[in-house]
Image (cartoon, rainbow, N blue to C red):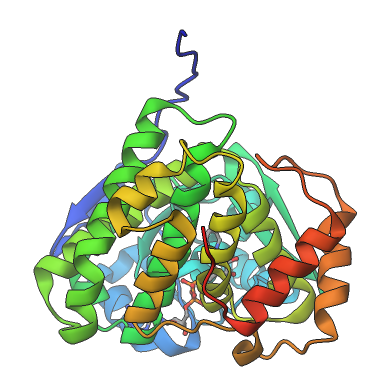
Length: 353
Ligand code: NAD
């Protein structure tokens, strides 16, 4: 059988290492800008201010209002601040929420983006933007959304709390899981998925015991780069759809929801494409879904949707919403099968395959 694929290339310049935060100014200037607005969440405001101070006149200030789920009212406020500041690019320092705000500004006014990711969520290398308006979250892809430069600085991940380290990494592993069967995957994507899973499998148990272990932090951030890069190249399926439903319609927390769903969506699809998901068994042992469940449980990850604020009556509505818009998945499914999968995730049952 011949192997047919398209490799779209990588559009984003990447700098990876320790102490790389010092290169932000050079990168802003390399893009041709003299004025940058620094973005962060309220939680990382001090860190953003230190960066702004270090940039001197290149920084026009900090907007520290980024929030989970990229609501359009926050974006409008940030956009007004961006326009008033005279900036021509944004520097997003933080996790997926901050990156999302930078993307939302960029797609509205063409701002260039320098992103400094401090979690493993993986938004920084993608052309994907999820936005929430009037309680509904919609996602779109557009080349204008993809950041121009991403600076990974291992030092900034040393402060990531253990719980978020684990769930954020499982969020990244979920991208790689769906990368193995993505209809538009290519050999680079497959290699990155495998490499990322191996690196996370090595790093996470070390980080749970020793969160400031620099070698393990470096492994984990490298794995996050792999997962973000492949996410930016291929189409996601059932797992991401369910996470989107639970986050968008029920307000469940992003990384934790991915973490709980992952063994169940993996097991469900492994029944249809066991060969494509075999690399997961190679890395984590056992059948793919059960192997990921054991790995997550060993790390102390949340295992039950019931613990994330979902109620049992919500499961019916979640199954209905998941069936509403047709989307590609390697295994076709019925409403009853979705309800069964959600029940297993609600109770945190260990999958059998
Ligand atoms: P987040 O960005 O909301 O961060 C969670 C909290 O952790 C925040 O308060 C943040 O300030 C703090 N934090 C981040 N890094 C830290 C560090 N190193 N030390 C201490 N605290 C730190 O959470 P997230 O999981 O990174 O991102 C979730 C969001 O990203 C969701 O809205 C999701 O939809 C989006 N996302 C988008 C894509 C995409 O391609 N569009 C991909 C993945 C995730």
